[in-house]
Length: 505
Image (cartoon, rainbow, N blue to C red):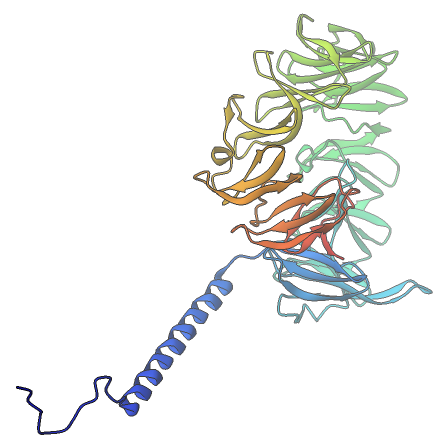
C-alpha cells in the first residue's frame, strides 16, 4: 500500500534559502579579503625589512636605478650615469643641467623613494678611484660635498666628517682610505672617517706601498721628502731628495745627495752599492736588479740569489716565482727548480695556498703546496671565502674544493636553488635533489648569481631565468662583446668592464 504524506510536499532537490546563501558568500568574500590584506601586509613588511642592493640601469639612452630583484627604483630619465657609491645603501648621485659650453653642471642625491637628500649642499660627488686594472671603484661611506665654493666630507647617512673649507678633495689613485685635501696651494691627507692624518702643509703626498697601511711619502715646499705613517708618526724627516715608492718594511729606498741607498728608520745606511734598482722586500732581504736582471740580497748587501732572472718575486718564505728564457717557473731559496719553466705566467694565491700557472692556450694548471700539478683547464672562478674553484675542463664545468678534490655544484653552492647541468651537449638546471627544473635546451648557460638569476644562451642570443626556473626574458640579446654575462631580471650587465651597470634594449 502506498501512503501519501499529508503535510507539505517537499521536492527532492529542495529550494535554496537565498538569504543564507548570500550571507555565506559575503562571509567567504570578507574572509578572502582579510586573507589578501594580511598577505599583502606581510609582503609589504617583508619588502620593508629586506636588505636591498642597488644598481645603475641604462635604458633608451637614459640612466636610472634598479634593485637586486630587477625592479625599477629610479626611472631611467637622466642623461648622465647615476653613481651608486655603496650598492647596499639607497644613496644615488645624479648629475643634471649640464652645460657643455661652459662645463657647468648640477648634482643631487636621491634615496629609493626618489626623494632628494642632503639638500643643504650645493654639490654632492662620489670620490672615484681606479685600480691597476682600470676598474673604477668608489671610496667607502664617504661623499665630497660643496658649500660656498669650498669642499668637505659627509658619510652616506649625511653626518659631517670634514668642514667645507678645502679647495679640493680627491682620492689618492689606487689607494683606498686615503684622501688628498688641498688648501691655499698645499696638500694634506685625511682618511674616509674624516680624520686628518697629515696636516695641509706639503707640496705633494704619495703612497709608499700598495695600500694605505704602508704609510706615505711627503714632499715639503723645498722639495725634500720624508715618511709619515698611517698613525700620524713621522718616520723619516723631510731631508731626502727622493724616496722611492717601494715598501721594504722598516727600511726605505732613498736618494740623498744623488746617491741611491737603503736606510733604516734611524737613517743609517744599510746598502749603497751592488744594485741598479730595488723592487720589493722578502723575508730574507730584498729583490734587486742589475743590468735588468733580478736577484736577491740581504739588507747587509750579501747576495742570496745572483741577478740572472728576467723576473723574480717571493711567493712565500723561501719560494720564488722566476722568469727565465721568457717562461715562468718556481724555485726555492737554493734555486732548485720546484716547477719547470714552461708557463707564460704564474700567480700565487696565499689564502688558497695554490699556484695558478697559465700556458700559451690560456689554460690554467693548478699546482698545490707540494708543487704537484693537479688540475688543468680554463679557470672560471676561485672563491676563497666559500672554498671552491670552478674550471671548464674540455667542454664541461667542474667544481673542486681547495684540496683540489672534485665536488658537486650542490656542495660548492649550498645556497643556490638551481644548478647547471649538461646532457647531450645542451644545458639545463636541476634542483638540490637532482630533479630537472629547466629542460636541457640551451647552448650555454651560467650558474645562478647571488640574486637568484641565471643566464641562458640559445641560437646565439641570451636571456634570463629566475630562481624558481621561470623564464624572465627569452633569449633575445646578442652579448658577444660582453666579457662577463650576468642578468638581474630582464637587465643584463653592460659590456664596459669595470663600470657596473645593467641594460635593457
